[in-house]
Length: 81
Image (cartoon, rainbow, N blue to C red):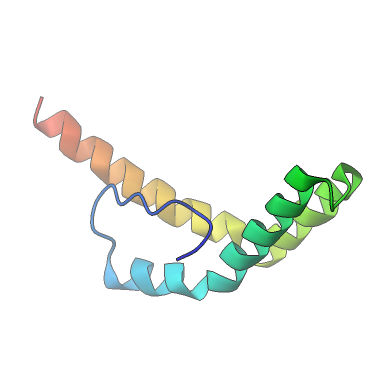
């Protein structure tokens, strides 16, 4: 998977894993665009368009999946204190 660091707080469910793979176009788009912003190839004035495109491609759902994994991780860590 390109783009987002692969930090697995807990093992994803099969459904989460499949959805995560479904976002591969989003990760590629984000990698390419962020590199362009950093190097100045893309004007920062286009940031809002970038953010809107990420939303269309499912960034909110991807964030929800990662949040579910983090919440499960936190629960496990709290139980072993």
